[in-house]
Amino acid sequence: MIKFLDVGYLINCRHKIKQEDKLVVTSCVLKVIRHKIEKGLHLFLENFEIIRDFVKKYYSTMSGKRRRRSPKEITEEIAQHLELKGYADIAFLFRAIARYYIRDLEEHTEKTLLQLSSKVSPINYIVYLRNYFKKQNNYLVFPDKVVDSIRKELQQNNIEIAEIDDKELWLDLDSGTDREDRYQLLCIEKYMRNNGTPEARLLTTDHRLPDTAQPFENIKVKVVDCQA
Amino acid sequence: MAGEAAVTVGLGAFVEEYSTQRVNELTHLYRRLQELRRRILQEVEEKAGEDVAEIVSNIVTAIQRYAPEIEETLAELRRLGADPVKASLESAVEEYAEVLRLDIPVGGGKTLEDLLYESRDEVLDKLHEIMMALYMEYVEINETCDRGCPPEAAQKLEKLSTLELATYIIYKLFQKQKIDKKTAVVALNEIVDKILSE
Image 1 (spheres, helix red, strand yellow):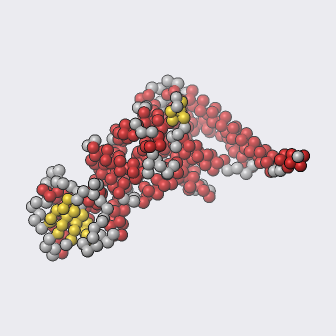
Image 2 (cartoon, rainbow over the protein chains, first blue to last red):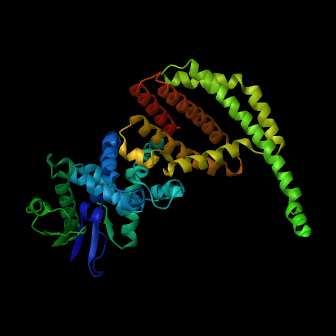
Image 3 (tube, rainbow over the protein chains, first blue to last red):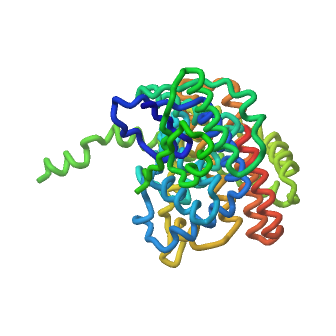
């Protein structure tokens, strides 16, 4: 059976799925990720002082040596912390950075920040990230760099990227908090229709998605918990 | 015993004395540059307001006024085989790296890192941002200029150096309470934005 992967799955999970399954990611999913990264970046730069204060408070009780860790570990921790504080959009940006190898960012970090020491102080990392995004308006191209990295990893894992002509799909949707979820489902439905696929499964980390997917009878939603 | 004495005194004497003499000559010239920098900073600081653009313009004017003396020192450094721009850049990268390791003591048994986590000092936060921004830029230019600086990198370096001097002036004005915290933060914020947009 074809298994589709949604935005949450791509950001939170590593692909440990049996090879006999055909895995597909629609271009709509990548479009949603791009949009969410753009939004997360905008909010991160706008709320930088607040985020820095979170980081200060969170790590201030630890001693210097104990708070130092790899950039990926810090990114993961900050993402969790931001989610708890209700900054889900910025947390999404941090999750993507923690999960994927975004070449330009990783190479830049290696050449600059990691030259100071192999384990990084979170306050240095958060300031470094802010400067990296602001540097020569890097934030304008960063969402595309994230999507490119995801595409590359999907290709390496033999996961099909289905390009969907989504022009009407997005426009036809009325606004609502689940607009992006319905959009992803409509894209899957269109793929199935075009390819004569009678039934498919959608893997997600979003516990609300089964409700949103109810009208789509041929798409069976499976919620997985990759962070557990 | 006498043989051992002769060896320990004589061995490496020429090379050591020769290189020490060269290092002393170079140090003397770098000190002269440092002295000129102090005079420029003092001059700009005395008539500085809180406007970053005005401070930058005053720095440029003061540097132009001291240009003959600076050039003379640079010529002597070059005569001794030194590359003053390359040396300054490398030393700046090293010094920023040292400070950004955050383990330097700042008094009271605390390090700069402790201060950054514990204090809610906006000026310190802005200075940290500026130091990180300059470090990031200098590392990049140092790599580009490894075998000769292309004109655009040299131009960028010139602008960054001026912004670095402007940072120092704002910081001094704040320390001497000639400008308040809010004004200092606004000015430093403007500087970090300029550094990153270069």
